[in-house]
Image 1: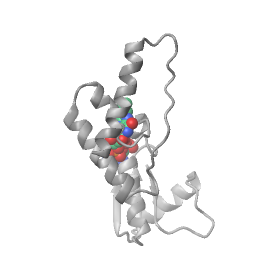
Image 2 (image 1 turned 180 degrees about the horizontal axis):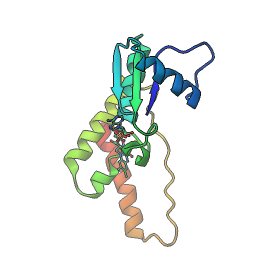
Image 3 (image 1 turned 90 degrees about the horizontal axis):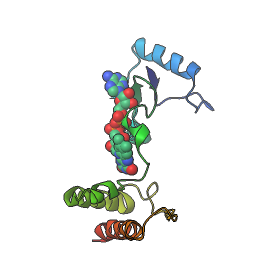
Image 4 (image 1 turned 180 degrees about the vertical axis):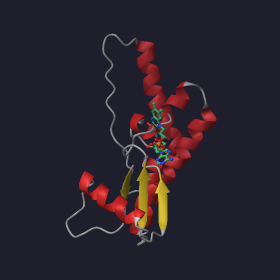
Length: 146
Ligand SMILES: Cc1cc2nc3c(=O)[nH]c(=O)nc-3n(C[C@H](O)[C@H](O)[C@H](O)COP(=O)(O)OP(=O)(O)OC[C@H]3O[C@@H](n4cnc5c(N)ncnc54)[C@H](O)[C@@H]3O)c2cc1C
């Protein structure tokens, strides 16, 4: 289990074994926290960062390691949504696009931005498949714009 609290000695900004031991001991010793977040995936890390940046004293408790769970598998694209499109699940693709737009324009424009994508269409990729990939990317973007 690791922990990260909102107060750090000057210069001590990295997560390391020594810091983890020290902070776990502080927590076990009854140090006051405003918020304890359980789980250091993207959701927990984001919640902890947001709270700490608002001045709250925060402990983040993770059973294994940061991004040990589902977050390990993500492409790190914010709601790519293409997987849902490919499966014909338009409602979820739409919901993903709406959330992506909110993140890009309102909640986290400092973190989320459009990236150019290179899709390697080698000779092994058939023309229909290549066309489908192109169409999928355009539909995904059109959903967000809509
Ligand atoms: C193959 C794949 C591809 C994906 N691609 C994308 C993508 O491209 N874009 C996208 O936006 N999303 C994608 N996702 C979805 C995305 O990865 C998840 O929605 C996201 O990672 C969930 O994060 P989370 O923090 O809620 O959960 P998790 O990442 O699972 O974090 C939960 C954490 O809590 C810890 N924990 C659990 N119980 C305890 C406890 N009792 N005490 C302490 N710690 C505990 C776990 O160890 C874990 O680290 C993908 C998912 C998969 C499977």
